[in-house]
Image (cartoon, rainbow, N blue to C red; front, side):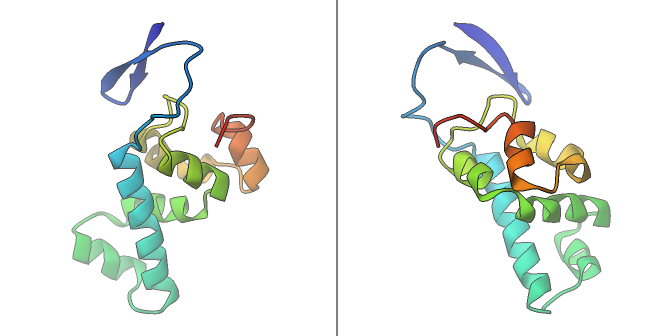
Length: 119
């Protein structure tokens, strides 16, 4: 076993144990929900980026960072929703530099350490 940092918390990881009973990270799920909700709102023409930022009382830069998450590979989204993402994959990490994510989904899986993991 070992301790791993996960955002601001420390997590005890027991090596060789299945993640079958893992719970989804509420912050990650909320972030993905916002990304898809905001993207849908913009795609339907119901609001612009600036209008979303104003209504949420957030800066445009943060809204853009979150919106980028609507384009994560479906495997990554599913893994996050099942709570099986790597310990290091936190909400803070996802919004920090989303424009550095590879555009191809297969490359994203490798980038985030999802490839080869049980979904």
